[in-house]
Every structure is written in C-alpha cells, then in structure tokens.
Image 1 (cartoon, helix red, strand yellow):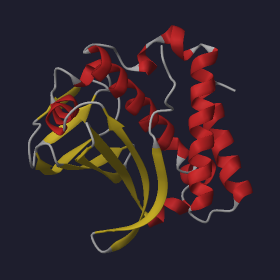
Image 2 (spheres, one colour; image 1 turned 45 degrees about the horizontal axis):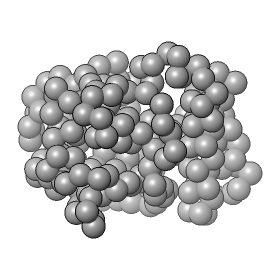
Image 3 (cartoon, rainbow, N blue to C red; image 1 turned 30 degrees about the vertical axis):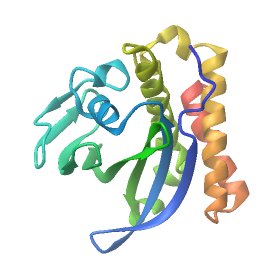
Image 4 (tube, rainbow, N blue to C red; image 1 turned 90 degrees about the vertical axis):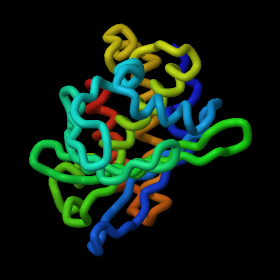
Amino acid sequence: MLSNAIGAEFREVADREWDGKPAKAVVAARVYPTDPEDLWDALTNAERLPRWFSPVSGDLRLGGRYQVEGNAGGTILRCEPAQALDLSWEFAGATSWVTVRLTPEGQGARLTLEHIFPATDLDGEHWRKYGPAAVGVGWDLGFLGLGLHLASGEAKPPETDPAWMASEEAKGFMRGSADAWSAAHIASGEDPATARRMAQNTAAFYTGG
C-alpha cells in the first residue's frame, strides 16, 4: 500500500464558533486529481463510501439521519452538491460537527474538512489525553483511503486490512500523522510538551504501543 502522503496535505487546529458558542476545529485539507463533482460523488455515494471509508446507511439528504457502521451517526445539516456538506457527529453520548468544502484547484479539487468540537470538550479526559490527533489520525486514514480509491476506482479502507495495520508501514503512518497533528497543535499556541505528549498517547493507541 502506498502511503507517501500522510493522509492530509494541510493541517490546522483553530478556534471557531458553533451556534454562537466557542469551539475548536481540527482542520485537514488535500487536493485530489479529480473534479469537484467526482469528489462529491465519492464522499456521498453509498456504493462508493465503503471502498475508502465505511458503509453509511440512512437518509442521505438534507435533514436526513445517517449512520456510519461501527462509528458515529447524526443529521445532515447542509447539502450543496459538489460544494458543501455539514453534519452533526454523534458518538458515545457526545456531539460534534463535521463540515466539508470542495473547491476547484488547478487540475484538481481541494477537499477541506473541519471536525468541530464544543470548547467544553477541551476540559474532558479524552481531549486532555489525546488532543487533536485523536480524530486527526482517523481522518488522515480517511484521506489516504480516498486517495487510493480515486486512483484505482476500487481500493478499501486502509484500517480494514489487518496485514497492513500490523505492518511497520502502517505504524510509521500513524506515528507520522500524530507528529504532524502535534506540530499543528503547537502552531495553534499549545505548549509543545503538552502537544507532544498528547500525540505520543494517540500514536500508542493506534499502533498498540
């Protein structure tokens, strides 16, 4: 499996507002060699989603409820084909939000994803232990899988391949992703030692270390 790109090409940890309340966003972006219409189809077509992400069921339209198999569910809050998708991300009793923006860039299309958390979540045990890399590594895997799918038309989510997940290549990918999110966290103003500790905890979680 090729992992020359560690998922996203751009990462940021940024302050946001959601419904007028303070929030924190984990931002990932990458330019893919396709057009916004094809990229949108890969992101929203129930037949293509399992080839790079996970099976998704439900009413996949504005106002509809969706469910990612074995993961989060929620409501589709905005749906503008080939441009914008917003949804709530409800998992383990907590609610956050995911926004997706597609824009043409050169001969390709830029995907910008923001996973937005209420500022109150930053005081929780999960964030204090793992920080932004907790979701960042997961989205990097998604960005990687999407790239492989767009290149081949088929592929499968990297995390569903036990042989790859157990490989040194995969462990290097997880550590590289966690380190990249640590750098983004430090750039946002976090104490470097704290950001690195969080990233190390995340890498250990993903690699079994």
